[in-house]
Length: 385
Image (cartoon, rainbow, N blue to C red; front, side):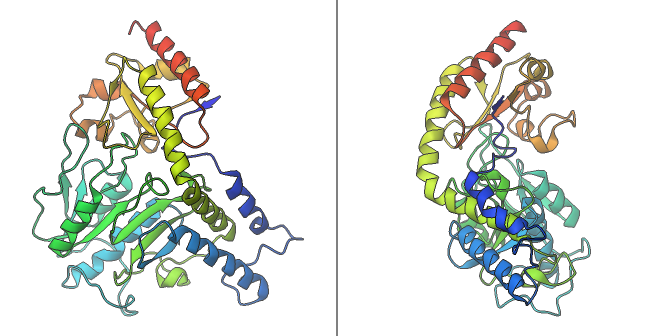
């Protein structure tokens, strides 16, 4: 089996797995304590969490803190919903001390909150959440899948959301310019860095969302980085954990694994980038007869989204069933709908449905790329393409 679906999830790093083992804890273990308990086992679990928090924070810009969540979807919901009531209070942006305790939790969309400007190729965790909260504005992309930071925005824009690396076509957005644009408008800038954390330098944003399983950590854990002075309201009520913003008992095992994966990503960043570049160059040679979707230059080269007009992707997937690749975003697989990202860059339904995405990274070998290309090209050729 050859795994080429790194945008959907990445293999768990052995170092991350090792870091998790102590905290999984059985009845004879000392590692199963609740990190919110005051006794010694609880304090030890809490200490492990804080070590991991520092490891995760090391790849973020200075001057902020990481709030652990169940993943990027929850982190993005916390960012979008957690800033909405503050905007509705008269608002716009408030950069002050910590969240005031009298601020009510978010209960639903309210008028007067301002508009959330969202790029047309954002993940549904951003787009759907923004629409659920209130008014939205779609920031268009060009045929290369790139946004223009000088695009016109509504006067009442309170939040701008632009992902750094697109999960479907890999294009890298000018997020530093978007951060400056947000500051000029007195708005917040939210960056979905799920595909870029540990790979690229992150922007000077106000809010950044990540997910551990996209950088060789475990599934079920992520984080929202919040710049100092940016206020959030509690979205998930309960015990008041995570600075009073995200209630729920934290998992020391998942967080320790995330921390170890973050430390490894930082240590191996340059090596990983060079390795991915070698794989990209070879893959482009091997798939020379295919059309690339999205920019070739402004792109994370671990994402190869290509198409061949007339291709029956379902048949291709069946013929190459031991090669793990995607017909689009894994989050939308099975829907039968063409990718909204591919549609946004101008592809028709037929072109979008004849596209595949190959994702590779740290543990992919050159031999795997070559074998997969031979098999996929052979199966496409059998379709007369």
